[in-house]
Length: 377
Image 1 (tube, rainbow, N blue to C red):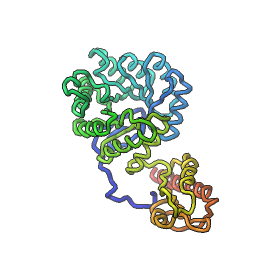
Image 2: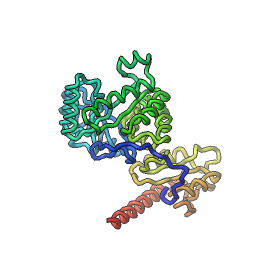
Image 3: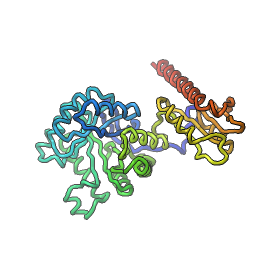
Image 4: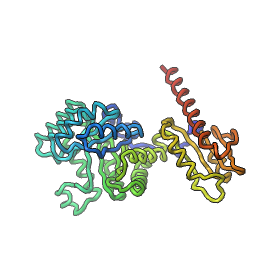
């Protein structure tokens, strides 16, 4: 809401953390919370993988993870990194050579648990490769793949076991004088993940990557992630995140931004505020919002738009948004600009007209911001 003041009761005090770089993306120490996704193409198919990364970047992804399970994947990674518009994280599980090859191929970050890749010599080789090629590392603890000795110690996956695993992996990196790392403690159970992340946040100053792993399909997984990640973000925990869905990776990016937008932590594109509709609606709210979401996907400038079916809540919501439309009678409604009544518009022409108003406002905001940057220089 570009014309409204910041309200102190909406502020979130973010946890203090160290800053690392994932390529050119800062993570931690107050940097914007970055949104990630992961490709689901065959990594050795460079064209398909790059195309999916480009789509994710267009949707707003700051960082994209790519699985590199074999040599053909790490061979392809060099070209993928060269053509990618965003930093690439190479997903490594157990084979230390894949990590070295990924670093040499230009990966910005290695997702790897150093305690799982064998001897101390192998760990040192991977860390040396990361240092030599400017890679950061993400320690990725998962409730479903905890070390056997921790399961024997605790009897089951639990927050204490997950945090202990993470701190053990951290110690290995620090003992080798490597500090460019972030860490996650993911679980598919919201309560388990949230408790583990809260304990982890108190135990380390490393940047934290948030995620509810194997969250499910588009709707169920988004809801589960919004509850788990939303609560952690509200507490100030989290420097980067991925919404893990059994869906198109672009949907993960959209869901991630919607969670951050709802908490006022990131602002990108048009935030549509709309009513669920009822018998009072002066136009078809649901179809209108569906059309506007599609028509306004290209707008990246942070803006707010209210689409309300009647005058009960419409004028009040419009006061808080950059552009608004409130249903009335006789086949038309009221257009609001910067929170004020502007003019009436027929329902039939309303969608095209609202798109035009939003695009015009976005252009004004971009021009103003550009002028401010130029003046500052």
